Image 1 (cartoon, rainbow, N blue to C red):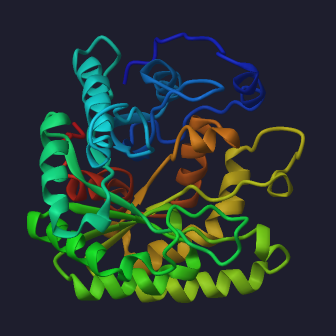
Image 2: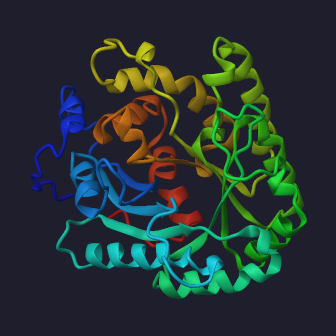
Length: 343
């Protein structure tokens, strides 16, 4: 993997993260990062250049899968079509990467887009538009159904049981009939709803985002043990269904989780904070249904890219070469039909 890109530190936050540096563990292990974003937001924007600054830090990231984040929607035209601007944007970023002028990683080799699932079966033509706009990189839709009774937590929709809405179920049926992926983002209190969808659509490829999104703080502050048991019960329900895979990562990294609260986390801090959540998932789903994610640049708020992957590699240190290949490369390559090679 080419690593001769020297961008320097682009902002004060990068300088803060740079206080903790580590050599990459298992640097030859091929990785597909199956969940990252690119966007124009302040401060600062995170485009190809900024992502490359994180990518080329020692780990062998072969390819990436872009996950929708309401980026670059069209300003004009029908409301339901504005989301297609994101696929156009991703296609441009991927074309730049494919030129080979930006390193060996195949950035945005595949993508998960957004659509209004309340359109029901009519959503099919939005899927067609994504397929065309993405240059064939479109693999499915992320259904962001996160809802919590505590209004201090983010809600994408007002519907408490969004996944059970009749038009949403019709749209999910279109995903299934086309062999597309449904990424799903929910809080741990909604995992039973994901399990119900998995049972109702047993040929649908479902990818559960962010380790099932345990709500550790906020309304659950001080309830750590109870939340873990609630989350684990939900994860067990979802893991029963072989059509569900899980993205592991995107967990909280609080100052109290760090060996030195004044410094960014080390990979050992990541291992200690995340291991108790990730290890049961690997046991329940099996390595062939697990994939590790960066969730960058969101998680750059707490952790640098090389430290994050080192932390994950520490968690999986005892697994076999074949099992690691699945979790870091094979599962994402298969589920998202990335077409990457690990040679």
